Length: 249
Image (cartoon, rainbow, N blue to C red; front, side, top):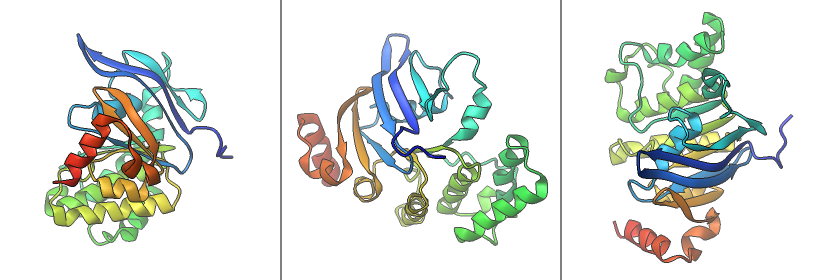
């Protein structure tokens, strides 16, 4: 039973240092069920590192991460099981080049969720058909377009039914004409109630689909607010400067 009033994902006091370099320096955030929270900010602001810490690919220097009220950053927690519940899609696709698209999607279903082969194939094929790639399951990643690869990478994560989906600049490596394919899929996931924390430089898209926007600056939350107001009513100087620069591109 989903508690819509409790954060699905809660991050408390998150810090990530590399030696003396403070990449994330005390971030608190919440993402509620069915909500999309967009992380924006310049390159080097800490967006990707924050997502990797939430997924725990990166060890935390300090702080806590809670999933449905349970701390998943505590020592001894099975990280593989956590990563099955917190999906992460990278900007560079990260599909296995030696596996077909279908096998890329079914790999974790079979080995992490212990789904039998036929059920995994049926689920993967249904997703591929849903996103218009039903005839490309036997293709290898280098035989399909970048937009198709990124959609397949997102579906690989979504098929695991994660409680939270993390998207790390998933359109940044794509040619402009392919960006729309991926954004359409995210719109569909939002309509289906997927809980998403995404780093993006697509500000118009963030304004359209996000519920909440967080502007990161030097590893800290500099300004945040409801997406419907944020882009017109940002009040802090660095946020206004950033938004102005992005609009003029």
